[in-house]
Image (cartoon, rainbow, N blue to C red):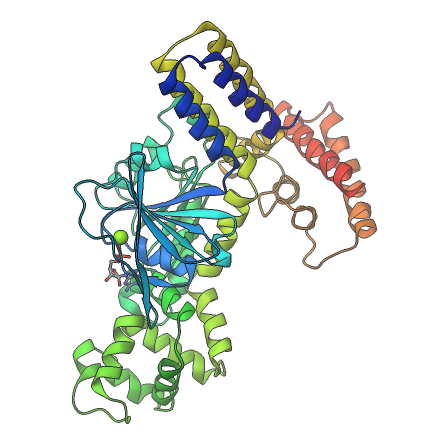
Length: 463
Ligand SMILES: Nc1nc2c(ncn2[C@@H]2O[C@H](COP(=O)(O)OP(=O)(O)O)[C@@H](O)[C@H]2O)c(=O)[nH]1
Ligand SMILES: [Mg+2]
């Protein structure tokens, strides 16, 4: 039985056990519904760190920020609701230029705003923007997975990240958080190499002994630039191209401060209001980067946007969401359902439900997906050691770089099935050898067994 089936039947059995309790039934029904939805990814972090901006970058539109939990779901047409308890009221959504505004009006209390929005980026996830007042309990209660934005690693960041794993079930499956080094453009005082410095810092954070058990990955993001790139207008591009026509050094003089950049004596025929507009949208660093890129030959909107999406870190952030959250949907949903059942059990303990919970915990712990994720963490954290080359191959085969068979087998093109099978059989034989070699350490062989199981899984799929 797959994990999906195990969890689904657990939820149905729990509904039968609690059919006489309206409160438990309604809770379990909401969990059953949630189980079939796309993965819910919350964006968390302290006030002003860039959460709403990051959400906009991911969606590709510039929503005016709201001081409430705001859920963005894929919808065939644009619509928005204010939700409070069981009540949901439609509210207007309007677009002016690249700005989208949801007019929520006046309410005493709001649980959340739900925005339905046609966007490819929302096909596989529901994004949740969190307000300043959000507690970790609320965030980890609503979401299946979390993007945690930070600038430096501070105590309050670690506290937040650890709170995700306070719960014993969550600890079994510490698989739902990706750290984001936010405002990457501000690293090192906005020098032109800020984004590559940020990349190095995020790599270091990824390997940090305190962060590693709490985040599956750490990536950097220059959110402001990413939003501007995804919503770049023709008039902005024309203005940037005009700026880029200035000599690098001459332009640099005017990019020393915001005042100089929007000041009266400017060598290019560009109104102060247009310069201010560029500054608001891109920041000084962003303007500098755009001009450098245009000079390097990324001189159409398509080319420039593509570069900005990659350099801002948005590309890598999207990949990370795909690899760690979307492709691991089954595990994340199972984890959420277990936590949900645990709540019911604590409120209304019943022997039949305890048995159910024990069965499910076993199912989850033995699910191969979880074994893979735990092995990824153990290898990254150095708790399990393999020789360097084998470790790299093991990581790939157990899905650390993506869970499709192409990613696991290391193909960077769409290899036909028989070519994949050949590589796979070779890997399988190698790892079977490792798994059964009596001279190797126990944890080495144990790791090899998991890799073998991953290979066997692929073989079934490839047919
Ligand atoms: N320079 C820079 N500013 C940013 C970035 N992301 C957000 N901001 C700005 O920081 C302020 C707060 O951002 P916001 O996304 O509303 O933060 P939130 O409170 O975490 O949702 C806004 O003025 C943004 O324009 C970034 O990557 N770089
Ligand atoms: Mg915000």
